[in-house]
Amino acid sequence: MSTEIALDKNRIPKHIAVIMDGNGRWAKNQGKFRIFGHQHGVQSVKDITEGAAELGVEYLTLYAFSTENWNRPKIEVNALMTLLVKTIKKETATLMKNQIRLTTIGQIDTLPLDCQEELRQAIETTKNNTRMTLILALSYSAKWDIVNSVKKIAVQCKAGEISIDDINEDLISGSLSTKKIPDPDLMIRTSGEHRISNYLLWEMAYSEFYFTDVLWPDFRKAHLHEAIANYQNRERRFGKTGEQISEVK
Ligand code: IPE
Ligand code: IPE
Ligand code: MG
Image (cartoon, rainbow, N blue to C red; front, side, top):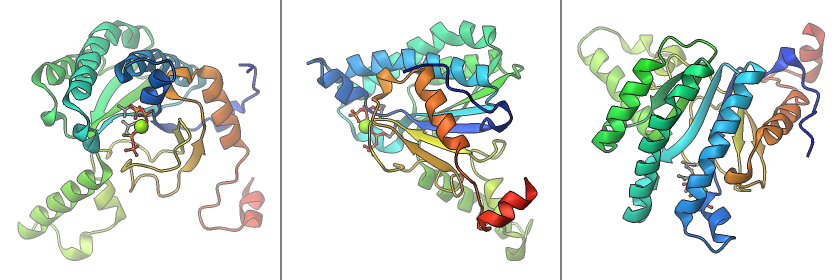
């Protein structure tokens, strides 16, 4: 596949959310342990992060570990956490070089302590970078985030700080862990699975979805370009008619 796909620089998605899937199958296809796939997936993370920044994407959210992933065999969970710590430690310098700010969404306090500490340091070190924000979804589930948001709003209501009539979409959006992040324009899922697996349910109400059979460890910049080219050929109507959309162009 060529990397020479012509992209409209004025219509680059501002926020891309990715479900990085297929590491286990990639490894299995080669008769290797699942963790081998996760290890190779790190190169894809690097390539796609760099590729997105080069194109002027402002926010890139990567689903790295879901709340449901805690149910995997302990040996795999431990290996994933070790890989996370190692990668953050090693790649903070690359984030600085590329002027990328790191942040997270999810139940970070459920991660192993060394993991939390590595994340804290990397977030602190990269906090003033402005080229792109890389958001890692870790121990994340959209339903958890929504439940949490409802609890926060209920507390405010109970304390008399807000009334029931103050509850609107903005208040809910502002109570989620994604509050400072614009909704994703494009969601990419690799590995041929056609589901969203508890990812950004509220935020993706109007995202464009792109599914590819490519397994995550094989996903490279050229595939990202292909996904964006596909996105650029779509018409985002937000409930309006196609005619209304072409009138404002
Ligand atoms: C995605 O790859 C990585 C994580 C969920 C951490 P998988 O591990 O889900 O790979 P498959 O779906 O089993 O191939
Ligand atoms: C979703 O992938 C979570 C991540 C990519 C981290 P899974 O592979 O765990 O999703 P399901 O459970 O098969 O839907
Ligand atoms: Mg999977």
